[in-house]
Amino acid sequence: MNKKILSATFGIIFLLIYSCAPSELTINYLVDPKISNEKISTIALMPLIDNYLTDEERMDIDERFFDLLENNYRVLDTEQSIELLKQNDLLEDWKIFWNNYLTNQHIDKNLLLTIGKRIKIDAIVQGNVLDISKQLPVHRKIIGETSAKLKYSIFSTTSGKLLWEANSFSKQINAHTDQATPMAMEALDIALDEIMDNFPYR
Image (cartoon, rainbow, N blue to C red; front, side, top):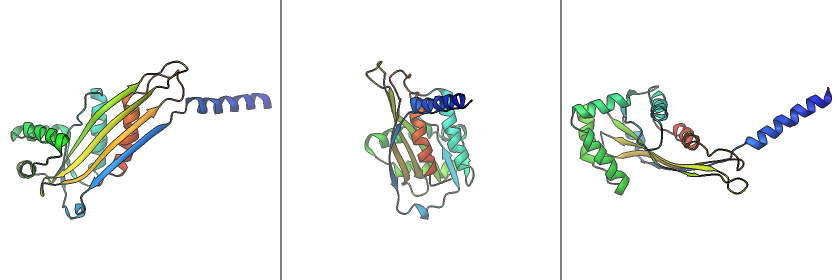
């Protein structure tokens, strides 16, 4: 009987060691020194922008952020935010705003103030999966890994400023060469958990 217990215990330990997958995470935060002076009661959550995830994965991330915010704020979900921007002919302007911000960090203060007045919000949140890259495994030579770059930004629509931002680089690495390359969400989840834990409006 002792031998059976020993064998089972060894099997469990071996399984844990063999399947353990290390991960890496780097996050840089930008925080406005006067963020506490902003009076935020209503927040618009924009849909996550990406070219890598399935619709279900993208919606899941949006829902996680909505659930995080709605505890203490009135939150417009992604569908409401899109619809209100469309109704006020501001959706294309927002897309241009975000592209310009990603490209050269330009913030169109007037557009933020206009959005705030027309759809009656105090802040707007935008997330963007900037990149997903994979290293395919090669038996006994190369361990598979997946890396992800993710950005989340919060802009005030009452002062027209960037209030808070997280830029992350995360990586999920296999334990051995015979494992399938990690899924994109495995790499993203590493960063998402940390970003949500440090989100200022929750």
